[in-house]
Amino acid sequence: MVTRALDVVLLGPPGAGKGTQAKRLAAAYELLHLSTGDLLREEVVRGSELGREAEGYMKRGELVPDALVGKMLLARLHSQQAAAGCAFDGYPRNLEQAGLLDGLLAELNRRVDIALYLNVPDEALLERLTGRRSCPSCGAVYHVVTHPPHVEGVCDTCGGALVQRADDREEVIRERLRVYHQQTAPLLEHYQARGALREVVGTGTQDEVFERLREAMRSTKR
Ligand SMILES: [Zn+2]
Image 1 (cartoon, rainbow, N blue to C red):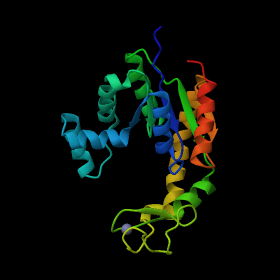
Image 2: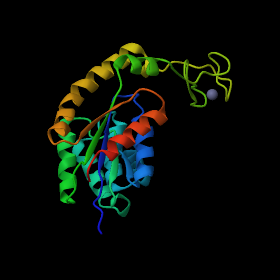
Image 3: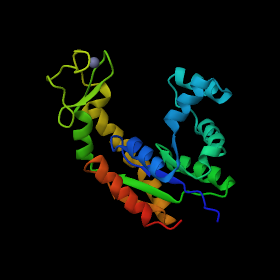
Image 4: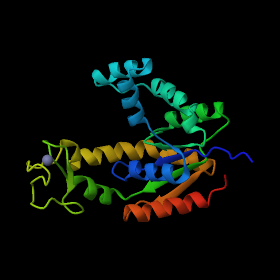
């Protein structure tokens, strides 16, 4: 019996833990974890033609065009590791990218089977993200509530002084969330319209969230 590939998209706001959950889902369902951020970095490191092209944009501080990311995704989708399906993490971010992904998958007679939407209230995200402190010396990341250092403001690993990155300030996060909601609403409708959307409560521990994701996967016919 031939099993069809299973393609899963993970949607959710910054700070919802998409990356962690996508990795766990990929491991549990033998899918390829596909993060476009990782994909870009890998191609740049490998020095592939597409990677060199992407590097040009990144060096200029510009966004890598969707068409170029699409070419990278296409190559990866055709690889053996992607044959059983993919867990897409951080992609698509907007309706245009969703259309592009639909087109790429259609070439393989596949489609997005499930769009898992990790729903986390903005206030919970703000608490998570504004509590982050990082160590500029060694890169360690802490959280004032969930993962505090032994001594307040001091890195456990290297003794460096911890700082709040500019990205983690409240006004910056509120703006990111605003943009996120604006781009995501049509994306949710897109997957809802074809019955692929599953909303999952994204608060609680990583294990709790993962269990809910598994439930949502079980309730979906392949
Ligand atoms: Zn440190």
